[in-house]
Length: 135
Image (cartoon, rainbow, N blue to C red; front, top):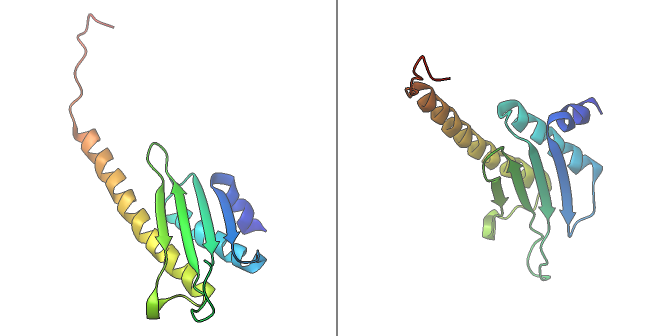
């Protein structure tokens, strides 16, 4: 419960299930992963996670899809859509969640580096000086 409060204080977390029954254990695991992301990327304002099982025919295995949308101020949200097909399909939900959040972590690190680089560039720019008489 303390973890849930710590995450929801700064970051709004939404977990949606499509084609699968809601599970408290899966939802808690997702919230833990979001908390880890938030530690590494404090600019995150919201996180929406969708766990989906698309309709499959009887001869195809059940495959989990995990979609993550991370809200960042003054920027378009970061979107990670994690779906593997073929022999690499995720038939194991915890594995699908872990791989989706690893991908999100790489994307967040890239965005964080871009933001930091941009702020360093802006700090290095010379500001126009204001004459003493004008104010």
